[in-house]
Image (cartoon, protein in one colour):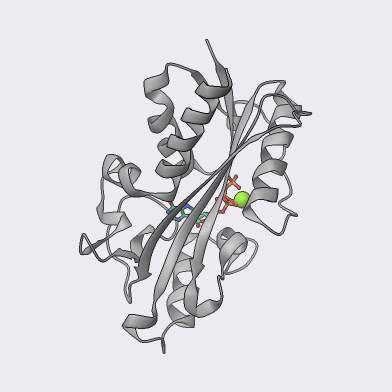
Length: 198
Ligand SMILES: O=P(O)(O)OP(=O)(O)OP(=O)(O)OC[C@H]1O[C@@H](n2cnc3c(O)ncnc32)[C@H](O)[C@@H]1O
Ligand SMILES: [Mg+2]
């Protein structure tokens, strides 16, 4: 059976990635099953950070590792918070603090100027020194709402407005979000590439 460590400390990502990988019958284990410190995200791109996180987990577990580096890019903010999405409101901040900072930063931005996109880069390393990682990038376009709505998902989902559905990402079920999301898209590409490389 294909064994895989999920190189993330984010419980929301673990729920989504496990659901997406479930049909493939792999033995997927979150890195919290081990007790090593999280990787430092010192890269300047999603790709660099995803590779750093996957390599770190592969080194500590001896298993193939799949990492997800993701975030929100707001057009009116030249792509911020981008790779800093998790720490936008400071190093110890939570999702609520990040949302408040984002809404405050955009308080004078007109509704039609609030375009944004979620990005997810997945990096899969077969082992810590794998020179040919599989890298996949998914993108999901939407708008930033003026007030949070919905209880599902995590992170910026309550303010990520999907114009086609007239709701936020936090008003979708996990299954609905997977159909559309940056993470769902990246994971479907990953599964195809992994199967082609076996
Ligand atoms: O680094 P790991 O351990 O994986 O966990 P993290 O939460 O720090 O993850 P990132 O460094 O990749 O930062 C991504 C942030 O972007 C946001 N984000 C990513 N995907 C999202 C999604 O599907 N819905 C809402 N917010 C998301 C959310 O705030 C995340 O904390
Ligand atoms: Mg992180």
